Image (cartoon, rainbow, N blue to C red):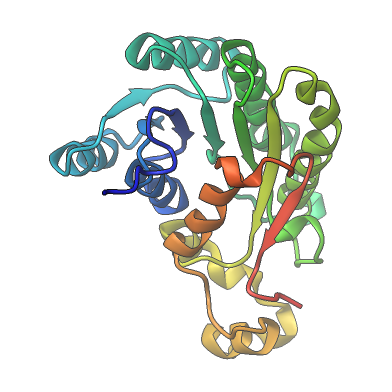
Length: 258
């Protein structure tokens, strides 16, 4: 007798799902039986390729464009998922932007962009999703270990991710009244396109010139970056029925970052 996949019959939305950690989460949720909506804002080709990959292997998936930094588009996105799948049970809010810069360079526009996407984007996707979910729904936001470690010229991004952890802690009792769990995952360094673009910025000035592999090995108990699939495994647990007694938590997925 074949064992049924744990998320069979569930309907999922992954924001920022076209690449990196988001794409890995979409693949994992699909593999566990969920129908998956892959949200993107700019990279249509990657989203379409991922959906084709999933549907070619027998999974139900669709690509949906929306800028989660716009609450109106976010609300429409959730409505599209409900129309496509007949409901919504799971949200993995992964869309986000990075920011590095010295204090003197931070502008109001920088603040608005980072907090509009990293904080407001996750708040309003939670708002729209919770309105569409019934009891048993699960929502996972994306924080970062940057919320609890000091990184040179990383203040704005770190503050936005600390806000995410505060949101899930305070949303938990409110959403529990509806039978909905909300948590966050806090990845450490992960081998993604974004990490390749900005990874060197995480190096303290005193260590510039030292190889990134050496730095990671000295600051991380496991001694390497995570693979996106490893983060997706943790996300899938928090979005599964097995995490029925977990809400309001931010789960560290840092490899023992010190």
